[in-house]
Image (cartoon, rainbow, N blue to C red; front, side, top):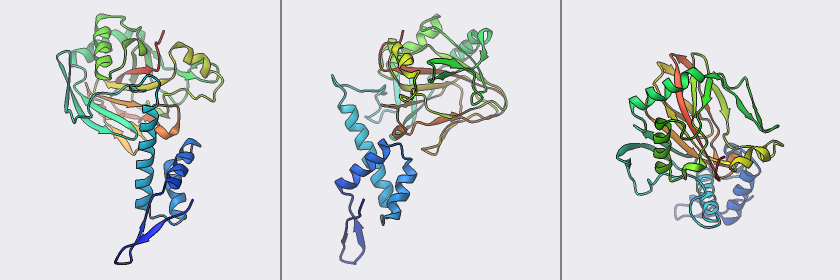
Length: 293
């Protein structure tokens, strides 16, 4: 890796981002290097920090865009709400959903009023009798297990199990432009005071021996929608450590994020911060590459 500079009339050196540097950045990302470590390496080699950060962002954003365009058959490789025209509200079957924030890398969109108060109450009421200690997917075996990193109670609904579930799932499919049958059943989670879910990725690690068995049911996960069914008194934010982002849990709102491949380059590492007071209830919808059965 080398720097290329030119000099202005005031003799201030200007560093130009070359194709060679862009290829090097992509190679580091594909090797699993953290973005901050790549920037540090560039600075150590003589790059100005602001140039390094800008080169990192634009290179990875362009690379992800090229990967999406290369998907056979065209179209998006991941779920994506139609907000490129600057839409502030998306009306889904007469239900207005507000777009609060949109982030490109990682691809994160925050919605408000996705669920009504009555729908939130209905989901919690239908889930309560079936709550048990939450499990995580075990990619070593293809099964599931109770894990110390996840201290919540939860349950899964079958897709379309009740009229309420069916209505919400159809709204999600339209909002995110993703077929209904490419979604897992809704999972409901309850976090009591002190409960949390430490940072993790939702995609299945392709290096683990149990992953081939898991993806038989519908391919990789490519998107996540977390809907907040109540507003805890304190704590419980959804955090994205690689992006420095914290999403406050607010009743009826939701955070959506997508990942076009199972790799740290997507920067979708996330977790549920500890609930400090009250309870936090969420409904999670995971979206798959193919039909989930």
